[in-house]
Each structure stands twice: as C-alpha cells, then as structure tokens.
Amino acid sequence: MRTLAKTIDLVAAFDASPNPYMLLDDQFRYAGMNQAYLDVTQRRREDLLGQPVMEMFDGGQGEQSSENARQLSASFNKVIATGQPDHLAVLHYPIPVPQDDGATAYDDRYWSCTHTPIKDGGGRVTHILQHTTDITELEKLRRQIGRLRPDEPPSALDSLIGGGMFRRAMSVQADNRRLEIERRQLLDMFMQAPGFVAVLNGPDHIVQMHNDAYGQLIGQRQVIGKPIREALPELAGQGYDDCLDEVLATGEAFRGRQSPVQLQQARKGPPSTRYLDFTYQPIRDEAGKIIGVFVQGHDVTETVIAAERQKLMIDELNHRVKNTLATVQSIAMQTARSHEDPRTFAETFQSRILSLSHTHDLLTRSHWEGADLREVLEHETTAHGLHRLTLNGPNVALEPAMAVSLGMIFHELATNAAKYGALSTGEGRVMVDWSIADLNDPRLAILWRETGGPKVAQPERRGFGSRLVERNVRHDLAGVVQMHYRDDGLIVDINIPLNREAA
Image (cartoon, rainbow, N blue to C red; front, side, top):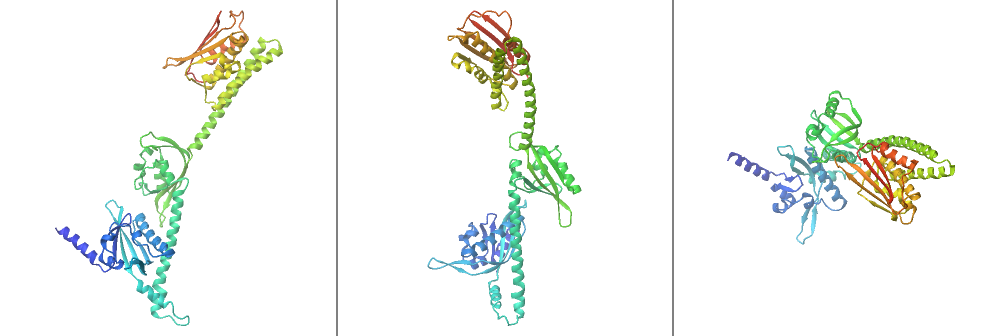
C-alpha cells in the first residue's frame, strides 16, 4: 500500500507541476504529459497519447518549420543513441492553435528544453522525459532591447539579457549543432566505409559499434553490447583474442596481412575461411589511457583465392607444356620410323598434331578443368561424319591428362577405320559404347566396334597407331586394352581406372 501511495504521489506531483513535461517512448510517441503541458499546447490528453510527437506539432510553417523540427528530432535521437541528457538552450517552436473556422493559427513561442533518458534494468533507453521552459517573453524583451539606437548606451538589462545570457546560449547551441552535424557526417562515413570497421570497448573488448561491412563479414549477427569472445566464439584458439589483449596492454598497433580466419557466416553452416588485411589500433581517452581497440580492415579472400588459382594454373600450364612437348616428340619419332617417304610422314604427323590440338582446344574452353568423354569422341571423329558413328554411354568427366590421351587414341582408331576399316567404305559404321563399373573403385569400360567394312585380318606387324593406342592405355592411363581383328570388323576393348591422378 505504501508503494502504491508513493506512486500516486509521484503521478500527482508530475501532473501538478507548473512547468510543462511530456514523456515519449523510444519511437517518439506520447506516453504521458502533465496538465501544464496540455495548457500550453491547448490539446487534450486523449488526443495526444500514442501519437508521434513530430506529427502532432510540426514547428511552424516553411523553411523555419523544417529547421525547428530537425533540431528537436536530432536532440531526441542523440538521447537514444548516447543514453545521456541533451539540452536545447533556445528553440523557436510555434504552437499550432486550431481556430473555430477549422483553420490553424500559430502562437509564436521560444523554449528552453531538457531531454532526459529513462532506462530499463538493462540500461536501454525506453523513454525520454522532456522538460520545457517558456522563454518567449524573455526573447521578446531581448529583441526589443536590440532595437536601441546605435548612439544610445546599453543599459544594465541589455548587458544582462541582450549582450550576455542569450548570446552565449545561442552561441553554445550553434556550436553544438555544428559539432552534431560533423559527428553525424563522421558516423555516416564510418557506416558506409567499404572496409569493415568496429569499435571494441574495455578489457573484455565489448562491441560498441560496427559498420555494415563488418556485419556482412560476421553473418549479420547481433553483437552490439557483447564481449568479442561471446559475440564471435569461433575465434577462440585462432590467436585474434590474444592480439586484442596485447594491443590493449602495450598500446602498440597490430597489423595482419592476408590472415586466414574461420568465421561462422551462416547460422547453420560450418565456419568458412576468410582472408583479411586488418589493423588493431588502441583508442585512448583524454588522459591518454587506453580504453578500447579500433578494428579496421578489408576482406581479401577473393584476391587470395585468385592468386592461388593463378599459381596453380601456371604450375599446371608448365606441367602440361612439358607433357605436350614430350608427346609431340614421341609422335614425331614414331611417325618417322613408320614413314620413309617425307610426304606421307608430314601428312600423318600433321594429322596427329591436329588431333592433339583439337583436344587442347576442348580443354581450354573449360580452363583445363577437364572434358566430357562424349565431347572428346565427337571432336576426334566429326571429320568422318557423325551420322556414321553411334555413341552410347553416360556423361563421364575426364581429367585433362586423360582427355588428351583418349583424344589421341580415338584419333588413331578413327584414322585407321577411315584408311582400312569400316569408314573406308560407304556402308561401314562405328559403334562406341562405354559404361562405368564398380562405383567403389570406378573403372571406365570403352568398346569400339566396326561393322560393314572390308574384312579385317591380323596385321603382320604392328604400326605406330596400334602401338600408340597400347602405350597410351597402359602407360598414361594405367589401363588394359585388347584388339580383336575379326572378319566383320575391328573391336577394341579398353578398360581404365577413373580415380587415377592425372599424369
């Protein structure tokens, strides 16, 4: 009962105060006001409760109206942001007075305002209490004194009001407005900076504020007001917490370049590796004491990955060039042994080099990441008419080295079929079937079958083409190959592992 009585006394005292008071919530809507406020504004309590204050009182008309409203709104926002009281020494804010004919007249008023934060148990500003003093008569008196003749000596009242208190108050308020504008501009620059920025406060490195780029880096988590170890628990054991402690203890800045960090950027996904260029700089108070750490940097993950990819591509290119030169050398030597006539040597050598070039073109399209088996087959046999070939099998992604070797194999088989086999006559056909067996240790089985061509007999000696096929399958692809020379056409059975590292 005693608590209730105290509450009633406080409410009664609030309402009985001769000075105008109003209470706003954190959205600047009326939560309460005393009778003096209602008398000054000539409004009813039920018309104001719950309504946005900036809509109920627009501060006059024209450009002055916008400036009055801006000053008042800026003061409210400052109280919410800082949790500290704010003062407006002189606020020109006319009061709208409804007329009997429905029009609105404005009662020209000047006010001195104090805005005090009301906080909850957690320290969050939930309401703003405004206390105002009507200084309209004082301002009018000051203006009247300001109209004295230039040759008339100022009076004591002029010195007190016109030349003293008001000028100082207006000057201080103008300086405060200028400082507030500069502070807001700096804050805007802070928030819009392309790099990530954060301010950590105290020995626990409590996140006081951060910009949008920092929010994106940490997956838009709510970290304001939390110690960094609680806000970003995945940093534990990565050394960054220790670096913050060292900056706070020594006052020396710490810089990291392309430093890998594991960050939880998705709520349910695993941590991802990001690479950061960053600086930890100490923040000092007016006495020079270190009170926090300023974090600034850039996410350079894409740059690091691009550099790594470029290095891998250069290493791969060097490796491929060496292999290609060795292949060309082998083709030249073997072709020379099989062709004593320079003209036939040149033709055969050129066709084999073109086959190698075709496969390289195919791989270049995928940035040497590989090629599909069907694409390699079509590339090497298209010159003989795809309508004469039947290709049947699933999509099989080939490593670059495997694609090069199979490309040369298919070229030799297609060339041999065009010279001596099924493709040398108009009725002949070639069927190529392939499949993948044993998914635990996948192997690629390819069956090349020729039909409708001239009869095939076992050759008396092995030519370069058959030796190249056997060498590529057994040496380059670690597989096995069998060639069957049947009366109705050549059959080549190839079986190679798919999980072998590229040569």
